[in-house]
Image (cartoon, rainbow, N blue to C red; front, side, top):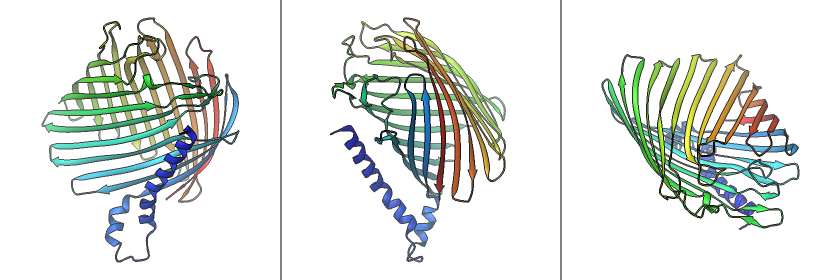
Length: 400
């Protein structure tokens, strides 16, 4: 099936899935018979956004586009648990009037308080994405970018043991992508990038004081690819181990922060590949001094097969931050920044980038929010030339 037709079919199925939820919300002919259902559905929320944007970058020049972004969610509360259902999409029409579903996602999250000291949590999420054909990581003569599926499931149990606490997490991940279609209608097979991954994480913590705790965390995961690497003709399957220690700080809902450092090892199953290890750093902070201001930041480290050098290993570091300030009930200011640094451990090659953005939300009524944004991004991944992108966006969102 042609990639565009496949996307249209998936969009149709997503709309069918959302229809029962919206129909239940709009049903009001018989208030008595639906009273109990209305109480249960009190957590329904939905929104539809329309956004126009113009992006200009060093490699491909300027490009306008129009985006439609529907979202729907449902929260069900119980005596001991909560279930959250959510789905949404981003449909983009570019200057050549070609439409693509840039994002289609759905998920379920559930938490259950088994006892006063035991919490069970689980989630299942799926997402389909398709990049712009002019994306810098695709061939310049791309006609249709590959469709990427990401599926993830996670289950965890948290046990409070007084000043000690423990958390065990099991997770699984599946990623698949279709072929890349070029302008001459030839294709590039991407099956070597498809993989299964599963793992477990154990965290043990100790409360030093009511606001300060220390912890140690160990993680194991295994990755299995569908096909051999086309350059080396071997599988890049491997096992990843990680051990970190850190501290966490929490003061009510005002401040929460965590920082850890440790070591990660990636051992390949194939003996012809070189095992690697690296220092890993992780941190996050959230500051909410009052209802009008929110500040967040995070540092993450990943270790995995290299995306640029066949058979090598990449250590990637990502730093992100965001700020929201509600000036008054009608105006909210937003800001964000990001930085990434990737080093290929065997060759020493370095790729880096950074970006920042500012935005404004204006609520003209209870159900209508107008938005304006400016974003700048810089990519520097030799031998590809440096690529700077400036994006201006304006839009409106209708909410429930």
